Amino acid sequence: MMVVFTFLAGFLKGGSGLSPFHCFLMTLMRMRLNLPLHLFTHIFHVSKPTVSRIFNSTLNVMYSRLSPLIVWPSKEQIQISLPMCFKTSSYRNCTSIIDCFEIFLEKPKNLRARAQTYSQYKHHNTVKYLISITPQGVISFVSTGWGGRTSDKHITQNSADRGFTIGDAVGLYSAHLKIPAFTKGKQQLHPSELETTRGLAAVRIHVERVIGLVRNKYTILQSTIPISLCQVTTPGELTSLDKMVTVCCALCNIFQNISLHLIHCKNSKSYQEYFNYF
Image (cartoon, rainbow, N blue to C red):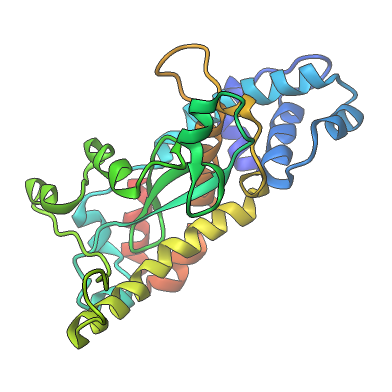
């Protein structure tokens, strides 16, 4: 934590009798522990509006400084320390594993917003994010938030500027899209499709674990997010929730993937070369 604070210290500002470190600590506590605002008023002896103001200003600094830690590495960089479980499988050329996750949202009063954010899958109003990880478990992309009604396909197609899209369009990037087979229109899967789907499930579980890690480490992402964190004053501006999700992913890249690489990568030189990239 102190390493991150030192990295941010020159950009953080105190206020209301609190030092920059206290502001940083308050923001981390809210994201990690999901404590109610009134509890911070007792811990730090400030008002609720002050807690909100400090959280938003500190979050802005953390986003601007930490978001560059989420980068899309080249295929060559990924191959440097490719885990053995990928090297010995048919997915040795894998560069990205993608999935979507949803965060519960307070029910909007606006009927249109309520319809756009309602997730048939979760039976709740949600904000949906697309996340991508490398085979090493490093988060390489996280999208902005979309209404829970939006399909995974639409979100992926509209994230193409970051290096991937869906269906036939991946050919434009000389890429191949691998997705599980579906039983739609047929009674059961062909044995070859079943085997391929099992292999994909073994790969896909990596991104599910990373999503679980982010949500378990920063428990505010498990809660029902207030509408205030999803509102913007300027068109095109990122919401506080978008910034928070990005910061949580960046922090996980810093702290968690050291252990992932120690497990997966036996070549210390390759390990160091890969991390120098970040």
